[in-house]
Amino acid sequence: MWSELAAFAIGLHGPSWTLLLGDDVEVEPAGWPSVLADFVGQQPHLRCAALLDAGDPGFPSFLAVAPSHLEIFGRMLPEQLLNQGGDPLLYELYRSFGAAAVCPDVVLVNSMGGPAGSAFLPPSAEPRYARCPLPLDQWRAALRGWQAALAAAQPRLCRRMQVAVAVPSYRVSPAALSTIFRRSTAKAIPAADVRLLVVVDNPGCLDGALEWLRTEQRRRLDGLRVRLSAKNQGAAGARNALLDEAAPCDLIVLFDDDVEPAPGAVAAYVHAFRACPQAAGFAGPAYLERRPRELLPSAIHMSDVSFFWEAPASGKLGGHVPWAVTANMALPYSAVRFRDGFPRTGGGEDVDFCVQLGARLVAVPDAAVTHPWWPERRPKIYKRFWGWAEGDGRLIELWPSLTYWRAPNPMELCLLLMACAPVLLACRLASAPALAGCLPAVLAADLILCILRNCCLASRHQQHPCVWWLRPLAAAEAFVIATLASEGGRLVGHLKRGSWASLCSSFDWFCGSQPTVVVGEQRRAALRASICLAAAGAWLYLAR
Image (cartoon, rainbow, N blue to C red; front, side):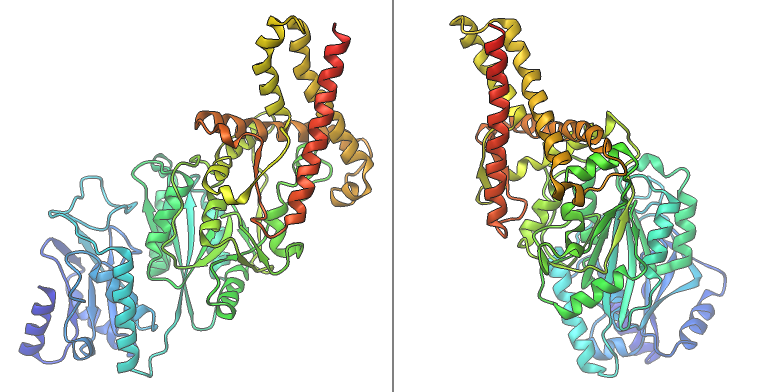
């Protein structure tokens, strides 16, 4: 219908700018056509101008296009579009050539519809008709086809790389988000257009941040788009929504909402993408601050949990890493999505996503972020480790080709002892108090082994320095508890899913790239299990 109306208008009035409007909108101020005409007249490079949508300032919902548009394409919109996706396609078409802008002085109010998920529309603003969007892959193909046609028709226009910085946010902290916004856009990138996408995944947290977000959108116009989830989707669902919003883009940078990116992090990703356009993805380091004077940070560093976080900059895995934490990574637009079934707060979904991409990400050392320490103290921090592991244990079930057998860990040994207890009691091979004492004997042996490893090995001292010699003793205790929390969470996750075959198995975090490391882990697990079993046997012998 819009194509027919545009052709009729051009035939009636001659070549002129054509504005697409709905019959349920209001436009302000009075005399707005003159304001819009002045806006496009002052910028001769423009081919498309969007009105400022009061309901969603970051979304180009109603557009005016230059007279050349119908001359090039013969119609206003691609014929495969029904009633959704037309406005953003036209805007992205011209934006990708630096020929689109939002007119801030002409405001449109759409009282009966508007984009789904806007943080600023009232809940009652529902469309009057069934929305029929084109599947994303078809919509993106239509956009790419029209971009090629525009480049051929107007060779003086230069294609600009489209980059999305995508941030799922549960906390919606203005201070933290301001840092991400500012640093992501601080450094101008030649022939690139950077936009910010935010999905608020906590509908109840906007009371104090809504006005700040509205102000940011007014200031950045098409540089910031905010979407509000109807309910908490969790880490995977929120990131999938962001990937859908970033469909027009060439490169998508994923940040968590609490990281502090280096001012040149986004530019480093763009440079890496231009150097390796066929790469499946890119990984930058996420640094946890070193705090050798504090017990819990020392223990977490001892656990090597941050090895892969910092691997893109450490050089220990070369120029590629198998996976990255989604607190800091980038990828070309892809149809791959995060899978359901992982914990809402995260745990394994980032590894699974990277393995789906091919488990070979280009390391970008300069694309660095700083990740803050988690606010929880003991014992809540152990609950976080437990939740992560309960989720990442699913990787063993999803990727059996990337798993390996190993000796049982202390939590699995405790389960085995409890399973064998009825038989031992029935055969009078052990008493109930003796069997009850086996469990702390296993855990005590594991603690002693950890203390010896971290206090006596020079390589561990060098890797995890502490300010005084007793610190490793105290940190080892916290480290063992964190490790047991992870192994306990993983075990409980297997039992919940009924995945008994996953017991005594581990996921290869190196995804096949370091086979010698796997052999070393198997040997270490065998030694650990042997010592724990010896401790249990010694306890049973002494308790006879």
